[in-house]
Amino acid sequence: MVTGMEEVRSADLRHRVGECVSRAARGETFVVIRYSVPIALLRPRRADDAYESFRVTEFWRDFPKVLAKAREGGVLITWYSDAVAVLAPIPEGWRRGEAA
Image: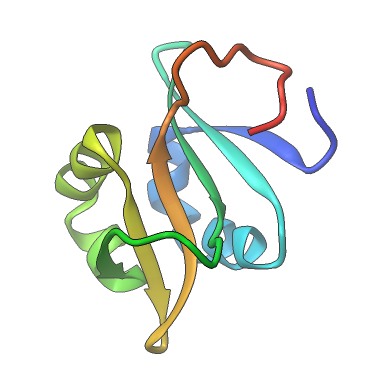
């Protein structure tokens, strides 16, 4: 596993969304796992990220919908109106243990 990259099950992410988004905003990256398969990355926002935005509360409340949108093309997660993190699809060709 890459330093600063942690695997989190999708079910656990929903229950720890605030903690994980806060940590992503500080520079950590999470690999979101469902049924042992990586499905998305929760990572810090980059300056060139341009995705549909969702508030952290929407992310928690409508978790399946937001996760589905993230797997299609990525979503920007906002916290108190600041864009802080991105939930994005797994990059093509990416394998566990590689940097995002």
